[in-house]
Image (cartoon, rainbow, N blue to C red; front, side):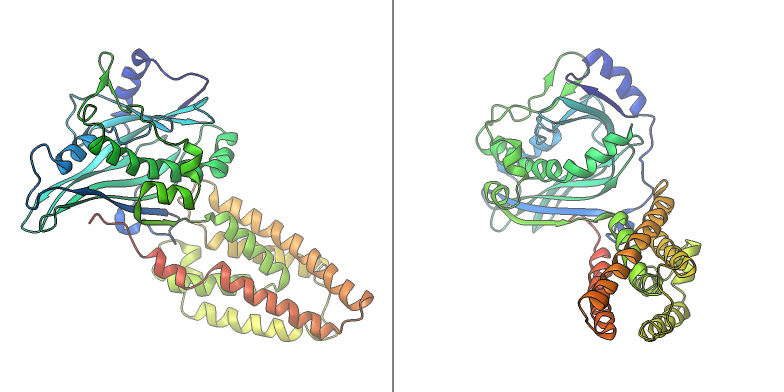
Length: 424
């Protein structure tokens, strides 16, 4: 389910049947935690802050750890200027379904989506006490993913830490302009919301105990989000200032830049040297997805494929310097470059994204077309009008190609992508 409205939200009478419907929905992603990697298309966020200290040993009744736990249990950690939570307090925490009211553009644009509490943790041993839970997005959410919220107390020092880990990717959208708007502004709202969560847990647990454990209720549903006097949302969306204000000890944004940029880059490579794009994609797939179930990725990831494509790419580099080489914008070479760009772009795009592979192939082909004409024109200008030797121009283009290839699909991304989010 997903709904959107301008200038107003939903009344409690409207939310009750919507919450009942959300309880019937499954989550909108099939992956388990170990599969939610960067190379699999997932962005990842990790942040940690020290809330303070209390007496050593297990959590003190009424102490910092217990108050922070109540903030989490009532979902009051969410800033209502960005996300308001609506739920039934009578429903058990494990498996509880929640309606999220996402607010943007000064709270004038609102979306209503569903999430569910997945796993919960409450552990006490000789060294640590841990409390937390995860949320999983449901069908119809504009995001897909899982997010962990964890409190941890070290018994020896009494230090209490708050920890957030999330893996997400774009979900379902009600219309095209919503998808475009999400791509443009969502990272800023997400960054602000994560930072404000740390601020609110600290503020509520330390400075506003009168709010801790209290729920706002107008009848059948409970609603999170006491108003606190924090800085504007835009302040926390900035990179450096928000980090200082939230007193974060650790903040990592491992954002997947999307298959669109990969497709665009591979298309540009294909326009420069036709075999470079599939050769690079094949080498990357061999390193990152050697056992992929996808037929196209599995074919390009076969051990012999990058070797064959690599030899063809080297042969093309040599042939490009020969005087009898046909212009790349002739019908046959240009068609080959477009097909090469489409194939490479499609191969690094997961089929799980609806229409993603077809869109990536089209983008790769168009980028190859534009790149072919652009570099053909630049080369003619340099040689015919500026008098630069053709070999020198060709070698310069080769250097540009190598630099772009090294940044586009670096092997190190595999290592980062394999780092999965696991609660600590």
